[in-house]
Amino acid sequence: MSGKPRLTYFDGRGRMEPVRWLLAAAGVEFEEKFLETREQYEKLIKDGELMFQQVPLVEIDGLKLVQTRAILSYIAGRYNLYGKDLKERALIDMYVEGITDLMHMILVFPFSPSEAKEKNIELIKEKATNRYFPVFEKALKQHGQDFLVGNRFSWADVQLTEAILAVEEKIPAVLSVFPQLQAFKTRMSNMPTIKKFLQPGSPRKPPPDEHYVQTVKKILKV
Image (cartoon, rainbow, N blue to C red; front, side, top):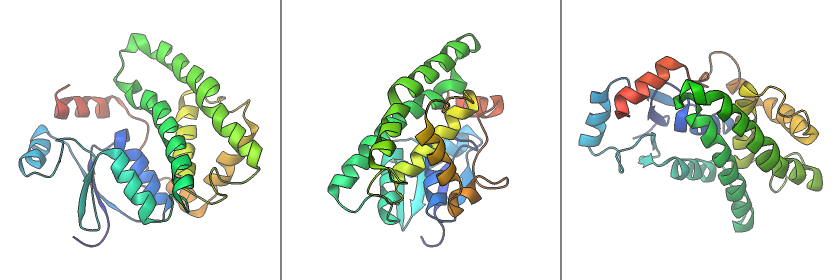
């Protein structure tokens, strides 16, 4: 396989959105194939395309990659967004894992019962403001640099920017007590590749709606 990376997933954010973010931040154009039916999904499994019978699937550099973390690690390494040595990589990994924990609450939110949504919003707010965002506020303040690790743009910066914007969609004032993160968000949003990705018409997906939720449930039979 050659040419642009090809992403296979549902037509929505889910576990593929951080992949879209990372490729876009690296300045890499990609193609997408959207799953719309259970039959498409079952054919991928039957054809042996999905190692663990799960999407997302990313075809890049002749590889067929599954498992979100493996996909992101490959892209980060491939496009020089994974630190300069093992120590920086370990720090990036810790930051990314923390952000992923926070984003998991965002990921499952659309699938929660309507009566639980208000409670879940409060939980996201509590975790973001008391556990996760303070870590990055402190890191940026202590080293006084533009980026989280090694004073150079990395996967961790991309993932944090995505998380900030996703949380702000639900809790607009969430950064009110985090001046370092406010400045960080502004810097990252003005980087040319990210600024392009944030424009209308980009591959960035909108917040999940009911159609997306029902499509995922139908295809995965959940």
